Image 1 (spheres, protein in one colour):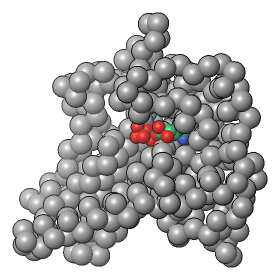
Image 2 (cartoon, helix red, strand yellow):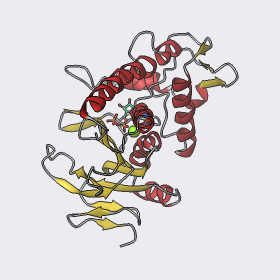
Image 3 (cartoon, helix red, strand yellow):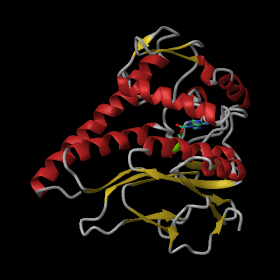
Image 4 (cartoon, helix red, strand yellow):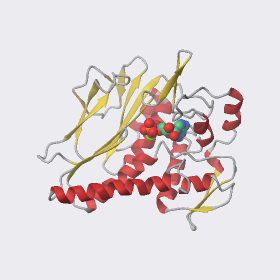
Length: 301
Ligand code: ADP
Ligand code: MG
């Protein structure tokens, strides 16, 4: 991060880390007392929220609509069951999966904009903002940096990258897109740009194996099982300030599969997508500017 002096930059970085903690205490589904936790534990009563939590939920609902319900922030009952944070994760019991699915669906969420309150019509339902919250936080951190006069920085919140401005020498930042399952050692190519968000959703960071099958953390709410769309990752890029959208869209694209993901993103001004198929072939939307690409394909080629 480039600021007027390294002392200034140091204290700003420290305050931004504190901000991350504050966002987590509003947006975490598991942290007791967070807005999301309160909604999930209110047994259907209205909960007045912070503006941040309300916005994340409202935006989450818009991506549910955009994806025909495949992206669903009410997958909380299912993601709790598929506990990837457990030391020894297991495939849940099919009966428990069927029961958890009954409590999913974004029409379970009711919003009261005037009171900035949220309630779950089904008291057993649970919100999981995991597919969108990191991107939202990255946008807020971007805003705080710009307000503080930062002209050159990279924010990296686990798969959510924001390049703020350009490198101190004025040249574009270079963000490598990792080849899935390559232990961070190989890249598919490089996105070379300034003021850009680059977000990847994939199955290779959080997964477990059971009886030779790979179980990952993006769940198809229609089946209750990890989504199987022939993709292993989806990377979405967008302009600075759109990391929340890129985060949600990368998960949406993963859930939609190649054809629907490409047609969705081709229709969205300012956004591009790169998909990696299970056979490790890559496909991109027409405007995806990948440099040093190792022989990927573009849509329509
Ligand atoms: P990551 O968190 O690894 O960066 P994503 O942005 O794709 O990846 O988010 C995956 C997380 O989103 C899961 O860990 C879970 O919390 C949540 N999630 C899982 N399935 C869905 C779904 N169908 N719709 C919305 N969120 C989901
Ligand atoms: Mg996401």
